[in-house]
Length: 376
Image (tube, rainbow, N blue to C red):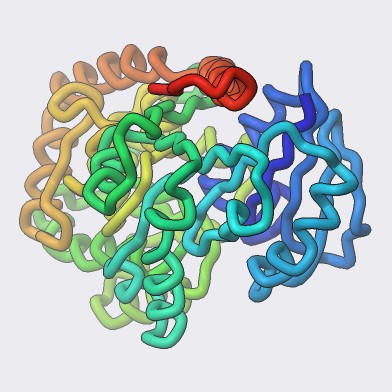
């Protein structure tokens, strides 16, 4: 089977995030038995065609104009690749491939921003993303959807996508780093955020909670690992609140360093306004680290509240403080959450995500060939 995947970035792109990890893991699994072509934006003077492993990468356009490059070139690429199915990963802006082909399209979607995009970027770009999301229910009405959480599925149904065309397939994690369990937890109470530093990720809330949290846990330390356009604002906020000495900005870290940080941490925190799932939550759990995150769509799906971690109300600094203290002030409770978190992580494997996606693709292809109804 020939499979064409379209995503804004690949894992070689320095701006990659959780969405890229997700789609690349699926691509890697599918490439074992199928011809996989990965259409993505051009960066770092990459060749148009690049073979990495079993996947052929096709680089076109530019980071800011990739969607227009797809619309301009998709017919020619389809002619060359001859795909049996197209996987379109909608991460902010759709590519609207059903407008250019009758080939079946599977949409993989972490989440739809809706009006929350206005919390992330300037008004002009936010309006562009918001308006581009609006026609999804019309242009993709004959397509099929793979949502990464029940929250995303409910949101899609609310926006007009038929539930019969949506399959929930959760993200997985790598278990290759379990050997890091030999590393002890930090001697000082350490909370951690790992991810991109964007305004909507709301890492500023972690800095704002530090003055209050320090009164209850005097030795508290915050480690922030990741890069993004909101980094300088976060550093300025730490200075303003006089907590710079409590915050360590790690910048971009390697995979192994990321896992070490998660292992050493007492709690991993995800304060974001919106997410499709929350891979880092499960990764932290694998390292026997409980999580505290916002009670918002997507994140609440990746946390078993009261078991693998705790939820708090977005933007409520007092609630964030008390929730962190609930876990960290009792060694007995910390140990219980740590063991439960590890057990929860066992439910999620990339192999399972890839296998279920392949089964879904075969199901869709069979429907196209037999022209029968295709409930997912």
